[in-house]
Image 1 (cartoon, rainbow, N blue to C red):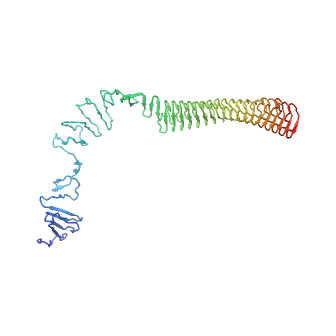
Image 2: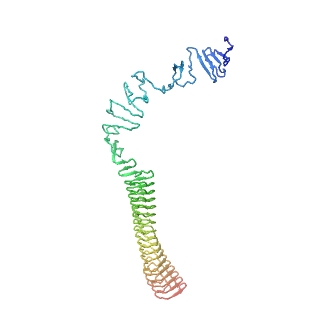
Image 3: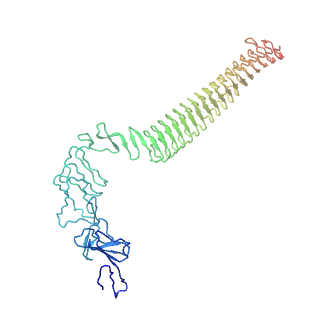
Length: 561
């Protein structure tokens, strides 16, 4: 070993240990001067004789302070892996004076944290908090302790409100012995996180305001609510079954079966044993009997009341589709619309009592009392107020217009388009009437054709055929058969004449005879009421214009004859 002199280096000779190599030692007399990593090689030393500090550079390239003179200011360096804010301890097994611990003290708040326990060495240990004005103090019991252990809070003086929060477990909070003797005026309450056994028993009523009126007992299924006096109350008019809410007898929820796709609003709505899905029942006893029918909507008191298995039905209105049980694909909108149909399917009834008595399928009724009396007649279509309203068994009829085919009962294959078209028709079939009151008086003439305003209005012969096309064509023909009138007022006054043909405006207007042919405007007009000539032929405008009673005439040309 050589002596260290100023400006010289320390050399180590004859080191038996092969792993040691010579190092440099540097000195500084400048106060607070400290070497940097760039000043030293790994393992080299530096001493500041002014500060009394000794440094070295470790193998990681970091300059470490390893010694300082007594009484010097500065940091005390502990283990290289020191934890921030860790409390130092003496390690008796290693002899280390400074060693990490798991206890930390926060710099800013002073909070003490650790994984262990604070243990008193005597049975009467006391934890005291000196700052009486601070909130937020917590005592947390050690998990796994005996159930007989307890924590007692004994404040010298308590002022103001205090809160005691217990963890999620069982146990007892004792105030004034073993019971809660009384509450002072103000806000007082217990809020349990969970409760599995036991009960809270109060000697008086449960009230929401001091001095208020509350409940002394609870009734099954009754829902609590705040009364007008802000007290807790309950009523038999507000019930909850666990699935549905009942308000004054009106059920709100999913109905029997509690299926998520069902909606119920109404007393006894969807109240039978039900497995059907996608159901909407709104109104008292709507869909009451439904068991497995699905995809139906009932809106109105007793709508789809008797339905059991029928599906894809829509009923809106009081007793709409009331009797339907198993039929599907029906639509009824209106008071008692399609009321009587039990098994009738694909029925569409829209309007007050539309198709009310209907029991057959493929029926369409739109309008007040449309097809009201229809029972077994099928493939009927009625659109308009009272259209086909008395039809019972007639089939394949079409009534379009208010009171069209209104009196029809058993007649079939009739088409009436227009207000009161074929209105009086009862048993006749195969008739066609287009226009206001066209064929109005006909009751039993089959295959009647009336097109135009009041065409064949009075026509009601026995047997034969009637064709009237034009405004009031064949208007007064009552018993005459096999007549044809095409043109406005053609054979207008003909009542009993038969086999007449008129083509043209007012052709044969006044004629009452038979077997006449008039072609052309005002041809064979007759000129006076009651012209009775027969077997006449007039072709041309105004041909045989003035003929009244003469018969067996032929005139061709303008004003011929």
